[in-house]
Amino acid sequence: MVGTEFFGNFDLASAAIWLFWIFFAGLVYYLQTENMREGYPLQTEDGSIAPNQGPFPVPKDKTFHLRDGRGVLTVPSGQRGDRDNLALEQTSMAAGSPYEPTGNPMLDGVGPASWAPRSDHPELDAHGHAKIKPLSKLQDFAVSAGTDPRGKPVVAGDGEVVGRVIDMWVDVPEQYVRYLTVDLNPEGTGKTCLIPANFARIKSDRVAVRSIYGAHFADVPGIKSDSEITLLEEEKIMAYYGGGTLYADPKRLEPKL
Image (cartoon, rainbow, N blue to C red):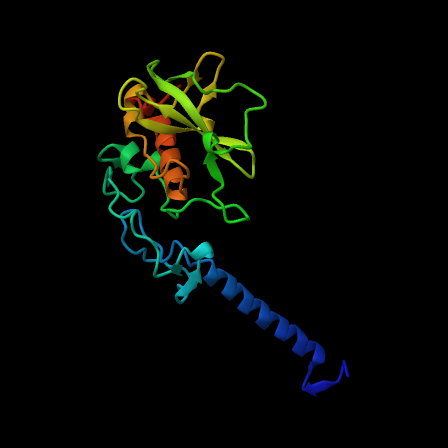
C-alpha cells in the first residue's frame, strides 16, 4: 500500500516520482533529437562544421514516404545540398564580420534574396489537387470584388512600363489571388513572368511594382508549367522580388537617416 517502504525510505510514491522523471527526461531527449533532423549538424558561416554541436547527437536516419507517390525523403543524411558554395565572401577575418555578395545577389539567392530548397512539386490541397492555379483555367472562378488587374500596364520601380497583366493565379482553397501573370513583350516574343500579389499595388490605371526595376523583369525566375507552380518555384520568385527591395538599386544599400 502507499506509505509502505520497499527498503529504507523508498516507497511506492518515491517509485512513481522517479519513474515520472525518467520518462520526462526520455521525452525531452526524444523530442530534441527528432527536432534535429533538418539543419544539423551545425555549420559555421563559411560552411565548415561548427565546433560546438550541443549536448544532443544527430539522430539516426529516418525515411519518410511522401504522399501522392512523391517518393521518399531520408533525413538527416538525405538533406539537400544545393545551397552549398554561395556567392558570398567575408569582409574581414574577424569572427562575426558581415558577408558581401560576390555576384548578382538577386540571381544568386543570397541575403534578402535567399531561398530555401523546398520540394519541386506543387502544394496540394486536402484532395490532392494543386492549390494554386491560373484563373484562366478555373471555370468556376471570377472576379467578384475589387479591381480586376487584367489588361492593365505594369510599371516597375523606376517608372518603366514592362508589360501588361494577362492572368491571375488563385489559391483555390483560400480563394485568394497569389500571383499576377505579366506579358513582358505583348508585341514580340510573348515572354511572361509572375509577380507575387503582395509585391504589386493594383491601381485604377496600372499595376505598380516598387521592389524591382524594368531591367530586372527579364531575369525573374520562371516556371515549368502553365497550369501549376511548385513550392521551389514559389520560393525563388518571392526571394527575387524580396531581394530587389534592397539590391535593385545601389542607392538602397546606403544608410538612411
